[in-house]
Length: 549
Image 1: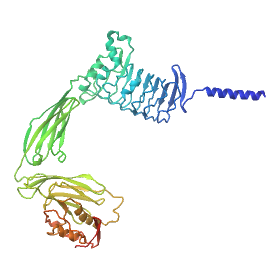
Image 2: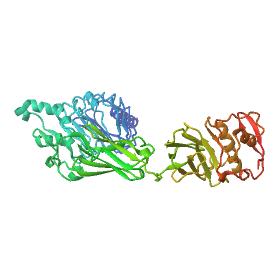
Image 3: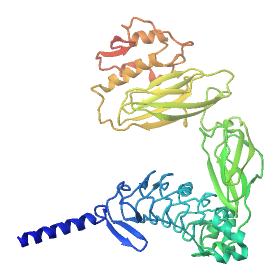
Image 4: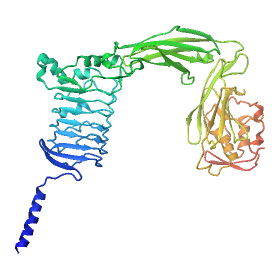
C-alpha cells in the first residue's frame, strides 16, 4: 500500500511541475535571462510571425527562416517586448503598422534580409528605440526625414546596402544630432551615438557634397564606425575616399551647339550636335517630328567632367527629315533644351532613299512597318509624305512562300493601316507599299515570318485559305481600302460577281474604281487551278464560289 501511495505521489509531483512550466512555441527555445524571458526560433520553417507568442516576453529572436514580411498587427500581444532580432531571414516588406504594438521596443535588428525600403514613419510607435541594425540589406535610398521619429536612437547601422546618394539633411534632422548641437560644449554628457555607413556603392558627385562635409565634421559623441567611405562612381572618382574627394556645386543643365541651323542636300549624311554641361552629369535625349518612324542613332561621349557631347546621326537625309530637332538634357537638379533647325534642299535627278516616283516631278516617301501582332494576323501601318498636289492612292502587295500569287490591295486617301488576317503558320510573308499601280521600290517592304501552329489549320487547305482572304477582306474593309485581284479592266462589281456569283447583294464599290495594270498579276487561274468548290460566309449568308479559271 505504501508503494502505491509513493508512485501516486511521484506522478502528482511530475504533473504539477509540468503544469508550472511556462508555455513555449513548438521547436523553439524559451529561457529566463537577466533582462527577462527570451524566445529563440532558429532555422525553422516559419513563413510568418506566429500569432500565439507566449506572454510577457522581453526578447524574441527568429533567424534563418523563410519569413517574408512583417504585416500590420504582427506583435499585437507583445507589449512588453524590448528586443526583436530578425536577422538572416527573407524579410522584404515591413508594413506601416507592423510595430504599432511595441511601445517598449529598445532594439530592432534586421541584418541580412532583403529590404529595399523601410517605412520610417512606423518608428513613431517605438519612441524608446535605441538600436536599429539594417546592415546587409538592399536599401537604396534614405528620405530627408527618415530619422525624425528616432529621438533616442544611439546606434544606426545601414552599412552594406545599396545607397549611392544621401543628403546630409538626413542626419541634420536626426533629433539626437540636433540635441548635440543645442548642448554645444555640454554634449559630452550625452551617450555615444554610433553611425555605420561603409560598404555602400557611393556615387561621388555634387549630391554627396553635404555628406562629405558631415563626415569631416563629425566628432564625439558621434562615432563613425568606418570613416573610409569609398566612391564607386563616377569612373573618374572610383576608388577614392569620399572625405578626400573634391566635389563641386550642383547645377542644372546648360546646352549649346556649334550650329543651330543646318542645311544639306537631300540624300546626304548629316550629324547634329549639342553640348550639355551639368552637375551631376546629365542625360541627353533627342526629340524630332518623325522619331516614331525614323529612329536615328544618338551617340553620347564625355568631353570633360560633367560635359556630355551628344550626336544625332541622320544617314541619307530625305525631304521628310527636315524640321526642328530638340536636344534635351536633364539631371536631378533640372532640365534644359535647345532647338536645331534642319533644312533639306531637293536635288534634281537624285532619287532619295525610300522614295517612289510616278514621274520625274512626283515622288512620295513611304515607311511601312508591322505595329501589332495578333493571334492569327498582323496590323500594318505606314507613313507617307508626297509632294504631289492631290491625295494619292497606294497599292499594298502581300506575298508568301505558300501562296501561288500575290494579294493586291488598293488603299484610298486618308487610310494608313491594314490588318492581314488568317496567316498561315510557319510561313514567310513579304508586304510592300507603293504609289498606285507602281512597282514597290526597295525600302518600302517588310518581311515577317509566322510561328508554328500547334493547333493546325482546322482542316482548311492552303488554296481555300488564300481564297477566303481574297473574298472576305473585300467585305470587311472600310470604304477606300479594298482587295482587288487584277485580271484586266474589271470594275469592282464585275470582280465580285465572278468571285462570289451566287451572292444576292451587289457590292457597293468605292469611287473611283482603280484598274490594275501590273502584268505580274494577270493570271487568275493560278489561284483556283484545283477547280474545287469553296464556301464563304459573309453577313450570315452562305455563298457557293465556282471555279473562275
